[in-house]
Image (tube, rainbow, N blue to C red):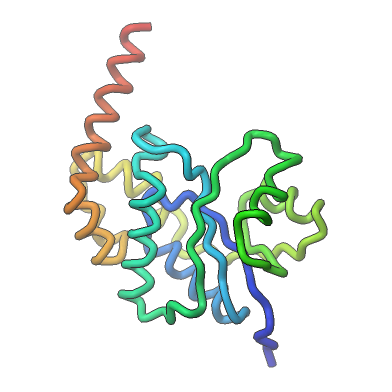
Length: 182
């Protein structure tokens, strides 16, 4: 029997939030009482790798979890800026978030830093990883391919509402122009 007495941390950039993220959250919540969702690299937006603001990502997560009928009393959503000094990052995360006992991550640096800080770190099973990745969602947006099936429907609606596809396409053009100018 699984003992549900812990709070977990799961940090991601969620650029954008997709169905793989939703599966990861469902998996984690099957193992713990509550979850701290850290919106990583919160200070970045309007770049090809990080097109959405922290506030937009928080909204996407909230919409997706509501759509998935995830009890809002079981999670927190906290923006976390990068400090770019690895030895300080775990302390920063701890200072910004509610207390947690276990970290769920597949990202090697995140796993290492939290293990070194004495945390239990657990892997998250991948859910169709090649299809459900934010990089793939953004690529499909740029190429004009169907991206909507990769994200919760409320997230797709929100991205349309904020004109996110036009933003990503403009960033792609801007990036190509800056490469040509070099």
